[in-house]
Amino acid sequence: MAWRKAHRVFIECSNQGGKSELGWDELQAIKYRAWSHQLALTIMGSWFVAETRLDWQARFAHDPALLAQFQTELLPLLSISNVHTLLRAVLPLHQLTPEEAIQLVVEQLSNRARSRQSRLFSANPPET
Image 1 (tube, helix red, strand yellow):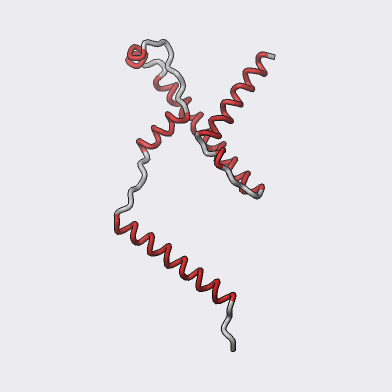
Image 2 (spheres, rainbow, N blue to C red):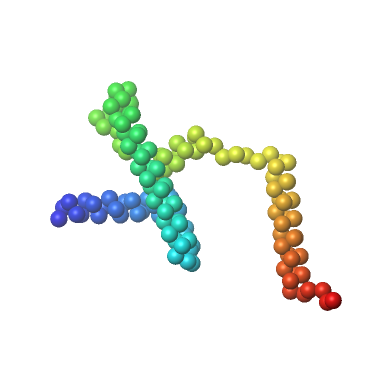
């Protein structure tokens, strides 16, 4: 019974982490296919976090300098937030230059204007 309870706690913690850190709580899917795609992305994110945790534990769990610094025998596991911070450090977001931002806005406005003209044309076709 205790073994089953322990697994339930792990599953609940995984679900909570998926909701708060991996975006599962922001899901607004209407169709099953969209829901399954979001679930797959959340599971892949959880898998990446688990792999990163295991790699971190294998590399740094027995580092004497870190153990002495934190005065502990074993380092705690990384949280999803810790992995997010590490990713932000190694994968910085590309910052747009003002010229790139202007070009992007012009493209969006142009596409929107063409879409609107097309919609208006299909609603009121010219008489021949």
